[in-house]
Image (tube, rainbow over all chains, first blue to last red; front, side, top):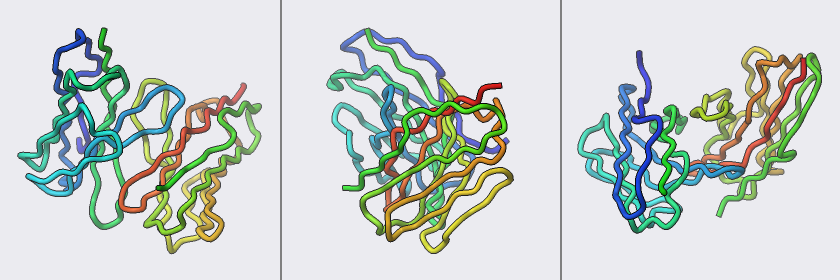
Length: 112
Length: 109
């Protein structure tokens, strides 16, 4: 099955701990994206990568870090510097041709 | 900075009625516009993609129109069903996606 997988579905962490969210795709897409969704708000872009070993900050990158060592994988680390990390995190991938994006099932992170 | 607005925030209709969802955006220099569906606690499912050169796109009971000059898109869902209950998001692509907050639709049986 082609698609985007995110793991885990639910994640719980104590304040002050770093946590890494996984995103893998087998669609052979060059571009990958991380978004954050809060209740009643639209998705906000955290980081994106258009090619391996390169990535750019989105609108709300502070307190987050990413890596893109492989085309298929784009993990997101939520650091202790992120002031309000509790949210629903969505990963997406896309082609350079149509700029259409495809989304994974999301990870709900709760930090207490 | 691109601003995307979706009105209304919520909509409740009886089964069989046609749905009209609105999306407006501030900067008309876009590559395309995507409509997504999101079920509670789930990821986004792409419904329709309209390229900037297109006026509308259709898939089954869904039809989306795009008027770049006025900064508007409308998603029409014909003969609504309870299974259409979800949140519908529009996203404008001007090298990156900017999302509206969504319209939550409830179709009453």
